Length: 323
Image (tube, rainbow, N blue to C red):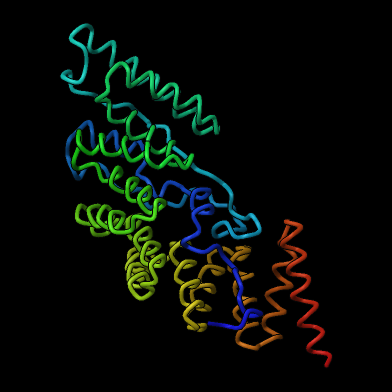
């Protein structure tokens, strides 16, 4: 254990439930658009994971204890809706019911994207009264419930979606996240492994499994998953940042510095990476380098608490240098 004065938190803990719930984004769950492709075609290869990054705050890797990176990307409006089998609907006007359910699902997604979760859930409930087998509504309602922290109900929706479509990778992913929030790591791992059995290069499943391994103290296995992600996508800032954080926790400062430097090469104003470098150099007892990064961070920092912490760090290092 490191001395108390050396404990730092340049980024949020991977196991921090509150932070994780605030930063769920497209990489964690397959988009409804991709799901629509798969549901319509019933072709496992039809829905490909969207590996592009969601619109992160330019100055933040992920949320830290000072409130960065609170941009929340919820459900993605599908470009087109899906064709349900007639068997899922009442025999009376099945096409009309399908159209109505599709329109209501879009409305609910729009509400969720605006943060009106309760109203979105009301509309999803209305859809599922038309047909309790309408998987897009089940899946999407489960995700909104998960974002609200209502994990028991979310799991119920994901269970039903999986029963109706056992090849729906996004539902296993979401259910695995719900199990993780509940502290049921064995079930969470089983679901994430299922996603990876469907696609071994699924970076969303890999990054979530890495976080799960971190939660239970299996740091080397977490690093293996992050290494795999970075082999697939060397520019994935989220993976680089997580790997840097774990490396720093293990005292592998040079490895962490390399990953953070790669992040800054992509995004020269990435505040989290810049601050993290300052803390690492402080721990390495290289005050001049630590001061350089802390001063740079202070120029970018807009949060008052964050500015105060950086100012205190700078003042302490400058005081040491004068002795």
